Length: 117
Length: 116
Image 1 (tube, helix red, strand yellow):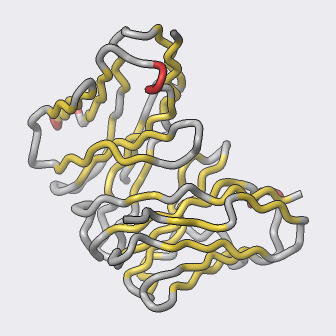
Image 2 (cartoon, chains in turn green, blue):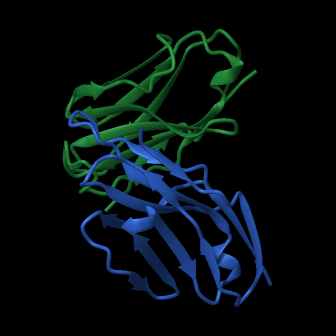
C-alpha cells in the first residue's frame, strides 16, 4: 500500500510566478488536507476536502491560494503570483472518513519544499 | 479557542536516557482526539498515536509511552532508553471542533537530539 505522495519534492520559483503542487492521497481515503510548515508559523492548516468539496477553506492565507480535488482523489494546490513569504513546506494528508472529528488518523505525505526567490 | 502548547523547544539527551516531551492543550469540547507525530530529518510526519478524550488509560508501545491527564489537560510522551534514531521533531496535535472540518491544530514541536 502506497502512502500519500506529493510532487514535486522541491520547487524553486521566482517571485510573481504561479506554482502548482500536487497530492495523491492513499487509495480509498475520502478526506484530504493541506497544511503548510514554515519557520515562523509552525504547522498551519490550509484547506480540507471531503470528496471533491472543500467545506473548510479557513486556513488559506489569501486569495492567491486555491485548491481543487478531482475524482475524489488527486488534489492540486495553486499559488498565484508567489511571494517570498510563501516559501515553506506544503504538506498533504489524507484519512479514511469525512467529518470524523479526529476519529480517523491523518497520514502525511513527504511534502513539497517551495522556495520563492 | 483551541490551542496546543509544547513549551520545550529543544531537548538534548545522551543515548539510553529517558526523556519526556510535554504537551498541554486547550479545548471546550468534551469529545476530542489528541495525536503525536514524529518528524525525522527526512521531513515526513509519521503518526505515532491517537487518543480520544474518554480514554485516559496510559499507553505503552515498546520504548514509547503516553500519559494522558484530563485534569491537567496534558498528553505527555516519554521515550525510555532513548536512541540516536529517536532524534526528530515531535508534534502534539488536537482535532478540530467544528462539524465541517477535521483539521488538526498542532503545537510548535519539540526538537529532540539524542547524542551517542
